[in-house]
Length: 179
Figure (tube, rainbow, N blue to C red):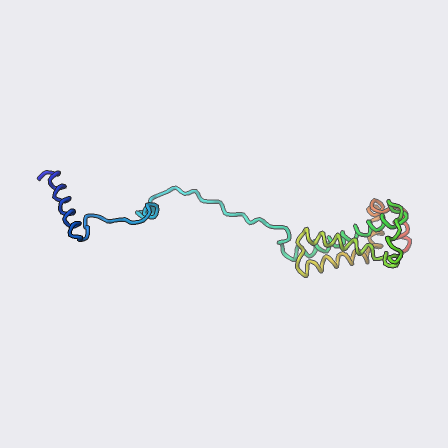
């Protein structure tokens, strides 16, 4: 038998089964998109480039409390230093602006608290910038502000050159004389 006759007989058998509505046993019928069938099949050896491990980016303020509490304390002291220097240059006659008067006469008794107000603004800015958002970090920031206020005369006595740069020679002499 030739190949052509065998193919013809196979085709006639299949055609007969189709006419009789019998099952087509010659092959499989795939229904559905070709992409779904493409994933089937035996696994192939493929060269895969390993992706690099994602490095963890550390965000500011995501550190541990053992690091950020001392940083908060130092930033609090720095904000108090800046608040006192700003108060000196705004309202003291020896400052750069020559001693502005109080904005309103009723505020005159409360002008002694101006450095604390300025320091609070700086401390809040530091708190927002460095994400010092939990209780311990903010408490360290407030403790630094208080320590900067309480120990200001001792700091002037210990570091007079720094305070002469930010204040004036006369101010440093006056503070050291009060000790």
